[in-house]
Image (cartoon, rainbow, N blue to C red; front, side):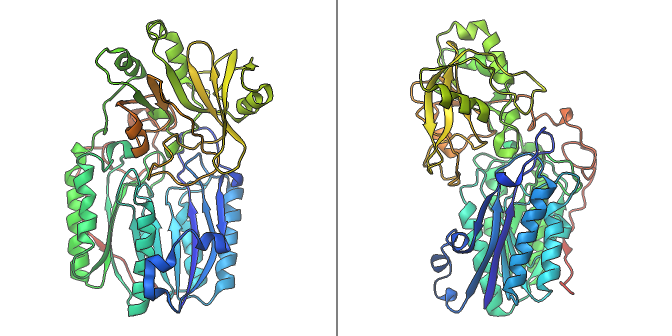
Length: 495
């Protein structure tokens, strides 16, 4: 049995001002790619007799739209690797599902169409995805199996990959061609409304796990979709695969209806308000500290630029906060040039330069110095200095060379990734992070949390975003409509 591995992962917000280059992707090939999956542990005796043929997995953290040259280069290498591996019985596809290439919609659909044309209709394709990817009908129709993570934050990202691999091998061993039922659920919801840490997400998305154990069902998935891109494919979906068409259809219909019925209850999952209200909470005597505040409009885990200075600027304007004696650190502003300048002057040196707003200065400009360098932060994977903590006498700012979320080292939702900044924040009264919902490692360090609805590339007030292409009607942009939730049995894959 010959099975190839390939993957492409990116989450592209179209409401930021920068583009994602080839260099932003982490590339795994050959033995390094195989090592990402413990196939012996996943498959046990089933692994005997399988020849695994790794090609390329290009994984990029969330960011702006992908540069066409970067996408074309990645796609070409994947296709070349698959062509060299032919003939193939199956392909495991490790995807995200929310990439947007500059000037082109439907990035994953374009890639999967070429893969399907190359490997032929008899090859079984099994795809794992992030639930914040978009499972369009076109994409679903090109694969035999699809699954997605069931928890947000994605503490089960590796579990989903393992499930996709097991399902692929099981189908190949049984000689089965799965029945596939797909439903478009007209919801456009961000992760900040659909976390599985609270209701209704905890109950709604758990339905997929239960459904996957029903007779006649191989797997059930409930996709959230990606809210910060303006494509006609964006939105929620349900897909159920199995060997019993009646069971698959009924299960897909049930999950889609439950999803839709919960729509009004998908509210922002944390205490939230404006940035000024976040500072007011910090000042309140009864607020447990440290208070961790999410700068949600500049959420790097959803593709924002990570260099916005709106929150920093407004804090420096709040004389009551500055006079309070509360210590605050902003974790962190993406500004590679300022980090390099900090390295040059060293700890104790002074940066006489403005920081931040190097990419996106729509909402506030770079913040002038001088800034004293308090600490240089070394990378965890031998990358050298990846961050610098600076002080202007009023606030501390952690400058980062890359857009990687700041969370504890043991956070189960955090990938092992280069350029990650970590330093001890013990003793600060307020810690500001550039994400939306809090991740497990962040919540573990916080005594209280608050989500600030700031402006930026991941704006949570959708009325301030200019959607032109999304499929309408869709909730919450539209309210008075009756959705078509009838499952579509996808046609068999043919040449």
